[in-house]
Amino acid sequence: ASVAPEPPGGLEYRARLGAAPVPLTDGGEYLDRHPGFSPGGNTVVFVRVPRGNPTGPAGIWLVETSGEGLRQIAPEGSLPRWVP
Image (cartoon, rainbow, N blue to C red; front, side, top):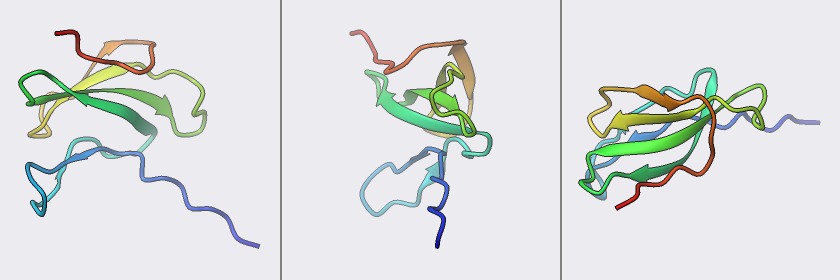
């Protein structure tokens, strides 16, 4: 028998095809899902769920494409999107 590997969980950004990835989140205790770019393209919004409870909320978060400025903007939510 075998066990399926844990998903990586973290997000990374590539400025263009073939570019080196910039880690945005580490995927440690959370699974980061449903990323979306800001209208200017330099910020990513996404939802986090606890790795041990993927149906439990860990909020909506933002991070810059440079990997800086990781912050939670709401304690709960799903499928975040930018409103023009």
